[in-house]
Each structure stands twice: as structure tokens, then as C-alpha cells.
Image (tube, rainbow, N blue to C red; front, side, top):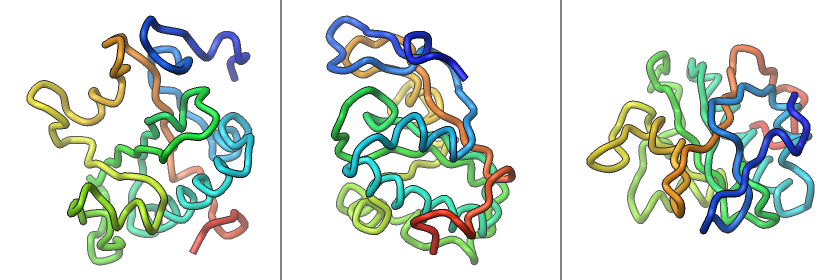
Length: 161
């Protein structure tokens, strides 16, 4: 694991330090240790764990976490997740994951975050997986967190359904 000084970078115009460029694979326990440091973030983390539990039960293997949640912003509005649905059995998947109405309102209400398919275009240039690796104020490359669900157990974690 990086030290805090090695893991974050400040970019001009970016409101908060962001993860250094790259895809950083973390266990959920390491993710919790790094990003869940206040009650506000704890509530969002529990929503994420609940969502990840359903995704894993549906056969999902890879999820990438982005948004202000993986910056040093103390009170992020939510988290963003880029999901690789390649191995997912949609009959087991919570239908909220493919509900994009009202700016993904159902996703935000149920899981306190937003979920995007990794292989869909976020804009006319980048797929979501690449788009997530761009800091929106500076345009610089930034890091995201990868969670390999094959390595995670949800029975004893808070937020799991």
C-alpha cells in the first residue's frame, strides 16, 4: 500500500487531491481503511458494500470506483462505479443497475452511488473505464480503485443484503 503522500496528487483547478494515475487494486478492507474516515463516508460505503454484494451474487468480477469518494474530499456527494458486466447473470442482477432514468435516481436512492457499464461511451471520446481516469477540472490523468469481487466475502460486512 502507498503512503498517503505517494497515493495522491494535487492538480491545478482540481478542488481536492486525487489518486495518482493508474488502476489501484484494493481489497474492500483496504478500501475501507483508506476512504471511510467519517460517518458520512461510512453511510456511502455501506451502500457500496450492499451493491457489490448483489453484483458478486450475479457473477460480476470487476468493479472500478471513482468520483469524489476516492479523492480527499471530506464529504462526497456519492461514489461512481464502473462495472464490468461481462460475466453477470442479469436474471440475478438487481434491476436498479440498468435503470438510468432521472439521472440514475433509483441507483442513488438504493445504493447511494451510480453505476455505469465499463464498455459504454461516457462521451463521444471515452469509454467509462477511460473516462473515469480523467480529472474533470484539469483534464489530467488520475487514479481509480479496482475491486476484484472474486476475493471478497460479504457475509460479515456491514451493508450487505
